[in-house]
Image (cartoon, rainbow over all chains, first blue to last red; front, side, top):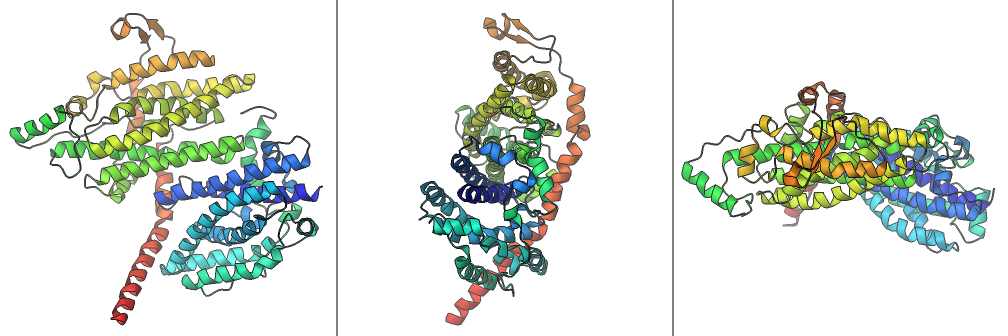
Length: 250
Length: 335
């Protein structure tokens, strides 16, 4: 597979799958304000995914559009990070995951602003504004939960324990990512680790959460299509209509 | 989306004749009543009930449509549906705020909803079983809501009227979006067309019930009309809706499930209109009283979201408190 196509597809899958997960909250959030904020974040991510899939389809040049890429691949061909496919869990899990991921993506999109792929640079210019809001929103919640009640602090710690294994994958480099660095298309994500740690730990201090930013996680494989058990169920929902009624316009 | 309005509203009031006459004169002069104005207790109570029911309908209404967000057939449809359901939540928020100006809190209203004491539109007690239902809800349920809500933009109570102006703009966008979904199906494959027809068959009669009981059976309509909370009767609005909708169904090549439907040139003062069949009011009252298909599930889901979220709301309050205390302590130390 072409590295450039693969790279954009990975990015598209990340945004789609996290957008899908966050959209599951719609109508079920802890307060009405979050019933508005969470769909908003999901919409941003799905909007980013649409632009990325369209771009990936153009790079591939086989005429696949956003929906063919988003809906019509087998599980092993989805290349998202494992952290985004994890089940939502409680509000602490959802917000801490968003905080870890968005803090990484803020750094990522900043580097992407100068990508030699002008379409990606353009997407980054839009996405950076959105992701800054995601970071702010999720960080505020991490602080409120960590420095809230005993129960909220305990739930935040539980969320940390469940998610810490998944953060390292965000920074992994492989041949595809290295090709992109060489072509000036994408950043060296290893170089983002220190800034990410500093950002995360600053918020942890405000949240009175006595933990380090987790950078030694052992879970990985999403970029090779090796997903967790929950992914099949996510795809069963996502692909339901396209698989049941193939080839129709909706 | 909107509820059938005034079921069970108590419009009784005990103020002096003179006070009521002066209030009525303001209403008749089309003056807007604002939150700090004096108003009959019955007027206040009726509005709290109606705006509360309306707000609850928006919030409960997020559930049947939310049911299809993760299964929407394309990314474009998924984004549009998410945005629509989010709009409904936004409508709920303005409406709770409008009701709060009358001296009731959002929390109180929420508790009444969860306790089964407050009503919401019965239409949301029907399930969304196919993707076509997302189109049908936009086209018909939002269409009926608009019929109900356009006159509410001129409601005598200022905050409600102003909220409705914004809500109506968004609803009319939803209605067009819904119609476009149904049109895509109606022009699609035979199975898509069948999906659209089957959905229309299920929703048609419940949608007609959204306008509420016949005028002859509606107890509180007259007082609400005098106070200009309502501008048209239930039957008038229902007729307008049928007359507007039948040509749309014909354009789509879909058939409304009513063998008694026929054009009557005498109707509407000789301008013509549709005669339609008898509504099953037993079904309507069954659903209002809690025996609809989804009544239990809708309230259970709302309650679950609220209960599961309790620790989150408590954390936010506790944190705000700690922060305020810390700031006060820092200030004291500085002085």
